Length: 212
Image 1 (cartoon, one colour):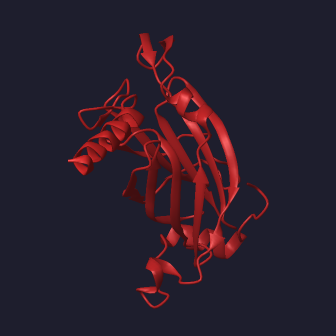
Image 2 (cartoon, helix red, strand yellow; image 1 turned 180 degrees about the horizontal axis):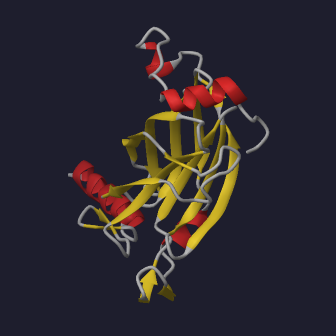
């Protein structure tokens, strides 16, 4: 009997810890989903193997996004926060993001753990009332997108924002080379093939390290 009471008390205590963030198992957010964006400088082709998220409840979610990225208009530039996006549903705001990608122009695999500051999570749920020019109307908007920009040398930049709101830079991070190579060593070192146009550019002009 004492064991049951103790177990019940522990359950209620844990429920109280998470009660401010969930409703019947769903995160209490002002929108159904937040978004992860992927971007890279033009010609600097990447393939994202995985984006994993640990949310503010401490829950770990694997492979919330991956694949191809959106590319900037020039090879020396970032997209200033814009990128190819994917909704992340039933996941609370991010506390940490684990990013793993193939830099196809270098034939290297990178991995980085990125801690997301509290001010970013606060920004993601702060309503902004403004006139949105593309929509041509007044709207209440949220900075519901976290964009991950990847460049050669393992450089990562992170932005938070949304279309009409624009984007704020969260930080610049340095990833490490994964010695196991692509897909954790499961492909015997074989990388995805590059787009021929990107390969021709890099063969001719090289990689502008230091631009990012």
